[in-house]
Image 1 (spheres, rainbow, N blue to C red):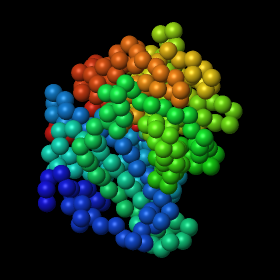
Image 2: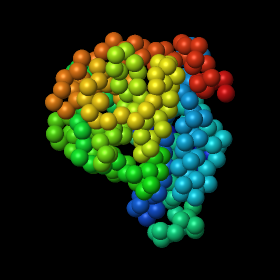
Image 3: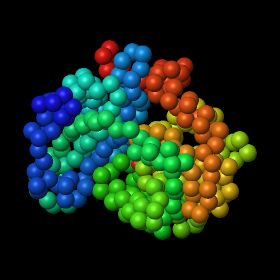
Image 4: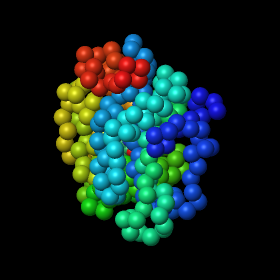
Length: 295
Ligand code: PMP
């Protein structure tokens, strides 16, 4: 079993193959699961996980929505055990809890949940776009699932909505899709929250249907920016636009529909501050990092 080819499943580190998934797993058929995207960074104290309690608190809210038992302490232990076992100094970490067995009824009461953690090397999924002059962002015709229909948490099945928007964007030659609601308010991208800069002020888009992003909260702390509702019209007039997410980190938008934007100085400076924070080189980030070796 190669060191990287391991996962943590309900208390045990095993090979990916040994983990197995039933062809009649409830989560496979209906998307009845909740996941997180977390990152582990190299720091002067060795590998350390960024804001794990915040990620697992959000995951717990998703599990509660599905009436699924979820033990934050056990999954924290799983993340640590897995990262010690795989020896990765930097990794993208994926805790996933889903209904595995107990039938295919839509009543979840009799079902049994499984909790697992996977980890892999993964650079920013929008990272390569930086070299091409920033993310090419496309205003989607697909609407974001309303919070009144599915709570804005990382519930597995709800990602089909994001995937449909992403498909439309990539087919049109863009990298990423922007959700806008019926009233013309900006919501979020498929896997990132949206920020913009106008006259040097940093503004985080606020929308009830958007995921409450942990990178967004971090960047608000680092920038002293404000959050508020933003119309598409206002975003079109921005000096700089950037996207935030655990996987994407802080990604400058270089094309917004037909408009070209130069990745600007405020975005560049915040990206630098964010990298310092996640690598433990900032005063602010001390309480945000869980070292794998010392815990
Ligand atoms: N919105 C959506 C839909 C996402 O999937 C993500 C990624 N988790 C984000 C925003 C950014 O959230 P975070 O900064 O917590 O990763």
